[in-house]
Image (cartoon, rainbow, N blue to C red; front, side, top):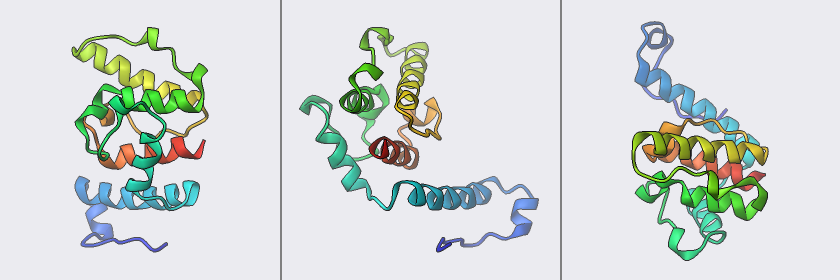
Length: 142
């Protein structure tokens, strides 16, 4: 399968070593995503996304903290299918309730397009690069 598995064995899984088990699961997910969307790198995905959004929403990479407000993702989704996003439904504000609502709405909009989304709202809020990468790769695929 051409995956890198270092310092983990069956005993680690049986013993419930979470970090090692998650590392293994991530490697398997990566193989799945590469089979599904092809091999794309972060720079290509960032360029593809930035080419689809107004300049004020562009990002540097998938660790860019501005991603947490979802505007970049929603603009990318809108560029793919304008009817998929209704900006009037977005909750304004920086309180936890508004953040959760915006992040969940972003995931729901991507699913409307037929994207297979394997991340939670927390991954957007925390700007989790690996999950953002798979999310963008899936958006590019649809």
